[in-house]
Length: 272
Length: 157
Image (cartoon, rainbow over all chains, first blue to last red; front, side, top):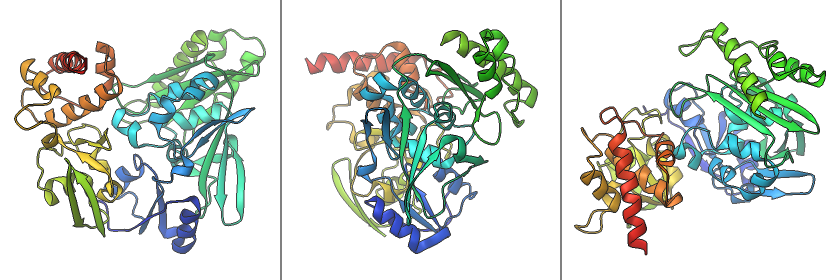
């Protein structure tokens, strides 16, 4: 399978990427690691006429302890998140989730910003970042703006990013080395989660993110509220499917996904 | 567009279409057909090669993205007549049957052992999860990778 023809432009800096987006407009698509975009292009589900390759912008590949949070460059590869010492100490949950994205080959190429900008509800990192109340920093022609994770994921593969913006940085709170659980249920190695759950303790409260339970990554709000009111893990987990709209596919029916959400949330809350 | 890269230590330069996938570039422009196209959907790992020392699925990477990089394919592993320890171990421990997945499996194992020189059996099983084999049931592949790891650690001493 070969993608439809396109023009290829390599940007070596954030400024060069923004200039290319300004020049080519909505016909252009940013290429980071390509682990989500290239399969879509090979299936001709995506046919951009210009690819702007931002995968080599080294200035956007970093993990930094900046006091009250950890800043991660959007083009930091999953492999580098998975093995980062700052994240091991300050946000172990993100490291653990990154370590289960795809397989080694995918983690060598795929980037955290690419995963976020793709906005796939079946991906692990968007739901984890939503649970962590991460902040996304986007750069556009008018300057830089911060977007809360809660406002970022707007629909299936739809985000708050404008076509002329580049996602530059992801900011996550310091949740510590431990105090989290990640439950990813799939039938075969390397598959996307049929359903996944990320739970993390933050500021005395427990945050729960749901993977593949709707058209966007979701927070299990009813579970979080029940926990805040003192419910047991088992009682809180019984609310896991409330407010979700999972789809049915070859792997699971709607009912099965709702069941999985309740079971996986319970396991996560018991493990945390 | 013109790209230039190093493949198995040899400089290569070609005029390619931007949409050319790395696996097709290696097989058709460079004539290196050891790298296989299996599923063509970045699931099976048969097309695994090393780009700057790390395993990637070459069916899901543009040749343009490898411009300026050093690529290693299965043809570049042996040192003259001497097989790479991973190749030798697959031979000795019968880590293949039909052989279709083998080039990718070997390249994935080389990358894995570079990152984890002393892996547990679990490390190996997780480390090759991006490579599918429909013949062996993986048992002898895992044995081969563990044997290669031991051999490489012995050689390094």
